[in-house]
Length: 215
Image (cartoon, rainbow, N blue to C red; front, side):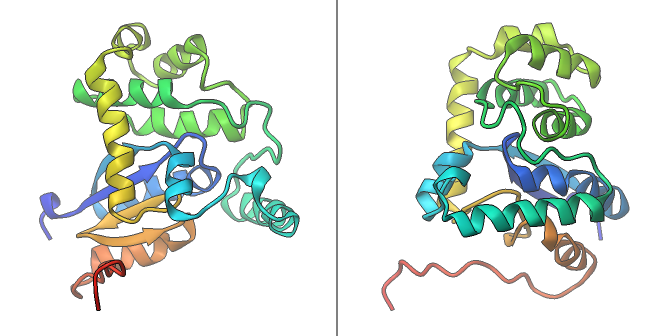
């Protein structure tokens, strides 16, 4: 299969626990399959609201407790550092998202920065809403943090950031990470095996039905 056909659309947020848990595994998948990733940072809380989801603290206590169990399981499975109650969660990731979009404009390789942004929240307890922290994250991962920060207030970047969230909601995305390959949806880092099978297989994609349409 040609490289151009192996394109994964990746909807995520630096606030997304499960995007972090699956981040390194996703990067390994990308390397194995020679896929190209389209990074699409979104406003996770707006996505939750549109899909009927709730922020963690608004979920039933039973679900909050079980989430902590799953966090410990996946920390062990993935072999990653993971803080159960990170100091800066939830911070506002918008600034870090716009730095990412600005870096993409320059044609930069953003894979390391994306992982670092996720790890900053869930393992390193750094504030991704703080400009100096975001600048350092960018510079630590091969980007020109100072130059990128100068662009973050541009109206074009703000509109693109909002537009990606509208796009995600329009495509029935309801959480993160959410991957699309040939318009076939895969929700959650525990679906990476299914995503890889789709990339390496020849079956027609299974697409989301529009349940809002008249029968």
